[in-house]
Amino acid sequence: MSTIQVTINKKAAKSSLASKKSSWSSRIINLFFCALSILLIIPLILVISISFTDEKTLLQHGYHLLPEKFSLEAYSLIFKSPGVLLNAYGITILVTVIGTVIGLFLTSLTAYTISRKDYRYRKPMTLYVFFTTLFSGGLVPFYIMVTQYLHLKDTMWALIVPYLLSPFYILVMKGFLDKIPLEVIESGKIDGASEWRIFFTIVLPLSLPALVTIGLFISFQYWNDWWLGLLFIDDQKLVPLQLMLYRVMSTIEYLSNNMSTVNVSIDMTQFPSLSARMAMAVLAAGPMMIVFPMLQRFFISGLTVGSVKG
Amino acid sequence: MIKKEWRHFKRNRELFIMSLPAIVYKLLLSYLPMLGLVIAFKQYRYDLGVFGSEWVGFKNFKFFFNSDTALIVTRNTILYNLAFIVLTILIALTLAILLNELSRKWIKVHQTVLFLPYFLSWVVVGYVVLAFLDHKNGFLNVILGLFGQDAIKWYEQAKYWPVIIVITQLWKSVGFSTLIYYAGMLSIDSSYYEAAKIDGANRWQMIRKITIPTLMPLIVILFIIDVGKIFRADFGLFYFIPNDSSFLYSTTDVIDTYVYRSLRVVGDIGMSTAIGLYQSVVGFILVLLANWVVKKINSDNALW
Image (cartoon, rainbow over all chains, first blue to last red; front, side):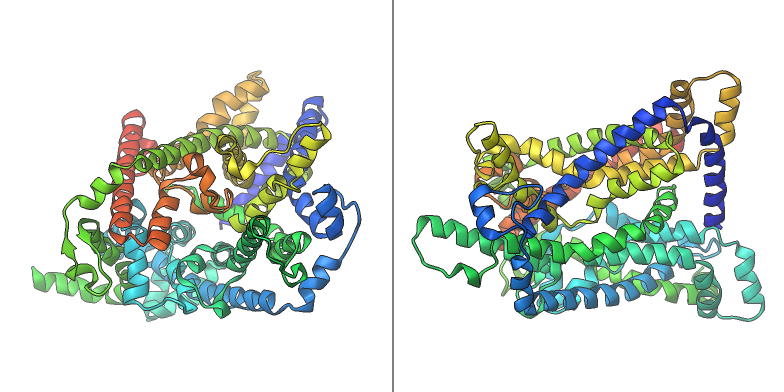
């Protein structure tokens, strides 16, 4: 239903904009956005360029927007022993998949109950869920709960559980579900279906676009997360992608700081060099930089509904 | 009474069971930790646990508030957030309005680019910033060298960081906010604009009299949410971008990074909890206050 509405609006917007297309003011605006785009993209180009530049050239001339001397050495160094990178990818993919599936189920389930206008405990339940966004115990009690009582430290669940149910996504989901007319659910009830059956066979199929959008939001959050890893993961085998990236960076910082003060002879080829660490960043962030923008229309449709008052 | 309520409950039983996972989840991860806030008034010891540890009154708070750090991290947190809120609204709204003037084909191209940095994690952005600021090889120092200037040790000079932090934040997130406003504009009925055009309104008048007023509820809601979060800093931004460099704490340390270090590096559980409580209480009051003010001005725009 929401998609229909959006397309109608888009068509309307299009027709009203058609007359502006050729005016000189829109050409200036266009030029402005092109300039802005270049400005926004330059940082990314810089990182990619460094990753493809010969190490010696970097040490002599510093970083440049275009590789002065092109080299694939950084990437071949990483691919020679890809264990750490692959393991981190594996952890992140696993966490993202499990987290998204469970999170999506719980989010839609919760959102469904508070979207049902005939549910007696709808108001207290809504307050119960959303009060947590207004007031929280803060970091330490949360940390103690997860480590001392739930015993999740250094387990994969520490990376999954804390993000399973976010009030914001419940709100967005509820926005979608509010549009399902009560009659549809009532007709299911008359047919003698249980609430679970109605939820699985009527509500979920109807809200497929919403599920895609929210699933994307949730998976995006899991994919880019370093916070839970930073708090709860010391075990080398469970380090997710973003945390690995951070550790690579701080190892390098540590080494380069120590090398300038103490004259230790460390074989630098053992450790990721300047270009290799940028290559690591490209390999860690790159794939999603292609995937997420392709899915951005789902993000945007989620924003439109989510920002509407619940 | 009880009997009647029980009958109601039986009728809502299935839906209640469906909301049970959320009830248990929020209880475990949100409400029970709130009880843990008593640690703020205790000398926490792991072996004695939350409730066995000894009461120490306001000692943890005194320790924090008597230090210079309290003032610095609070000031930094609030000033940065204020700068973010104001600049983001101004820039994102302007960009969204400009974007709305373009044809569809171009909007798509530009919005993809605007949105791109949003998909990066703060860790990756940390790498990006390092590529610019690295003392020896960084792009900025290379450029300074071209102009015959001396290289600057960015990660040791606190005075540059307010600008660096603000630019980084805007680079990463302004596209996202722009898209929220732009999406809001798409839902404005185009007949308003057509009617205005017939009445001879120019573009600027339409923006001022139609676009901005229609977007006002959205702007206000986002504003309230942001004000409520003014005491919470984006940890990733302030931890990864300055690379946790202790030279920079005077301008980059915020409440959240300070709490994290007290917990994970210093291990001062009591004080970290106390600061967390201070953060939550002030934040809570601020949201209520912001909502109350908005309600006074225009009750339709209030969050509740």
